[in-house]
Amino acid sequence: MADQSQIQSSASKSIRPFRSSEEYLEAMKEDLTDWLNMLYDLDMEPATFMEALETGYTLCQHANNLNRLAKEFREQYSDAAASMKLPQKDVTFQVKGAQPGSFVARDNVSNFIAWCRQELGIPEVLMFETNDLVLRKGEKSFILCLLEVARRGARFGMPAPTLIQMEEEIEEELRRGRRSSDQRGYPPVKRPVQPPRTICDLKNLDELVREILGFCRCPSQFPMIKISEGKYQVGDSNTLIFVRVLRSHVMVRVGGGWDTLEHYLDKHDPCRCQFVCECTPKPAKTSGLTLPKTPEKPEQEPITAQSSRQKNPTSQTNGVKKKKQFA
Ligand SMILES: [Zn+2]
Image (tube, rainbow, N blue to C red):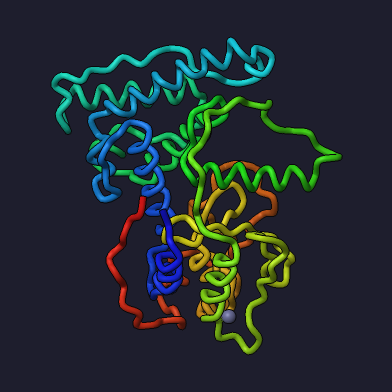
């Protein structure tokens, strides 16, 4: 699990120049890798994540495990289950002959996709296509879909990836904030005991935030005020964001999705996006970070992720170390 030095070094990593705007996907991929390794005793690496799943075998196995959990959930919590979309129909898949790229593998993946669509009711915007996985044509679509599968499963008892646990934590905090007026939410769910999460202590998180924020070169520093542990008010718009550390990534919950703090600041801190901010603000364009849930506050993005990358005044020459996992 994360120790102090690893967390500390993650700050310098997250402020390296020209970090990919898709880094949040990398963080998700790492999280999903650890999660599936834990669930199915696999030995996947984030780098081989797509290859490891392209036969469709693990995916279909997971689908059928979710069906089984959903059945147990339905038996135990019939009232709650009545208002939920729970999967039932088993996925047929083959192990024999499921070599990567084979017809059998494609067929497995295709069956999993149909299950996601029909049994889980995952909306089209979060779906992927067979070639996204098999031909690596849409890694992002695949990752976002798998994360949604994990999110759905967590509602009826499947252990969740860390990112989903963080989402639940944040949702719970938001619910507490509006408890008296709005009792929306999922029914109480009996869950298997999740392994304790040791992401970071929150003092450490605040240090990381300050370090990343410290690269601001505005005449007066871009405001990011700590409201409570892991919760900050940013900019002049009173926008509230939740920040968490996920392995080597400092993540921000924005709307219904996640971004990295560094990339978030690229889009909001004037000195980091001045080359575009000085121009006439363009209409907001989503960068694909936000999942199609109702955002807490609408994101206003006068610039695109791409443009803010081109000339980043925070360029540093930090050595970029090879990513190291700790599990
Ligand atoms: Zn600044």
